[in-house]
Length: 361
Ligand SMILES: Cc1ncc(COP(=O)(O)O)c(C=O)c1O
Image (cartoon, rainbow, N blue to C red; front, side):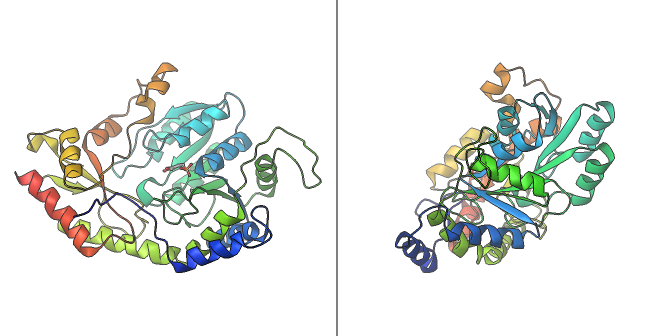
């Protein structure tokens, strides 16, 4: 079996054609493809505004400096890619790492405990981990009851509707639901936020090219946007394919003694990742050894994620002693299996059988 990665892009002829057409056009950047892609994103997400940017990290950066002030406290999750909380640091604000629920997402009940006891908390940066849509009602309740800002990092949930949160961001890295190679987007219903983010993307200039604040060049090119336009037309199909794969994994591990899917199958998940928990107390090798055995069998499993607050840099600035028992247990057990639209049936069978075989040895 040739190497099976945990995630990869799905590129077809339409994608290639539209990129070539754009390369032959007059505008490689700041042209019509950018507006067209942004329009498709805000329509898809029921939002009023969209700003495309160079990558998901840039989307988080611009959102953070727009929503936050220096020294604002922000509740966030240890179970994410580094960029989620790094963005809080870019804004000179203070991340507070909250424990997760059993489904891998931030525990919003614990967030409420923090909010009750500390009125200086200004925002929550939450992640729809693995593709499972965050509890929108609870986010809305927290936003209005405690008068805080909510940013949803929807890098794992491309296309999810914006309801009450201030900002939702997406990433178009190749392992995500749709790709522009590198790319990201911010959606919001707030015109002021939109204008400010748009200006930050372009050196802090307004529409008349007056520079009113210190900004960046975080623009996404027309070449990337052209690919995005083609990809977004197949987003629903990609999500359905991922859900189909997830269903099959769930069935394969039903009542398994050692392997448990992170949560039961739900179509409220877009399944960017398919995470399983392994009960290592029942086997005589470690997580690292299991990963190594799978990779030797050409199965590219991954770990999502090592706790951000336990990263060397975060420890060097005072983090690492948070009370996060659920996250700690999760980190010991979690492994992400291959999931992407082009994963073939027989490849998935191979992953399932190889994993079960290793665990039964
Ligand atoms: C949850 C989450 N947030 C943010 C990012 C950053 O996106 P990008 O790689 O496009 O900068 C990622 C990408 O891996 C992610 O998974």
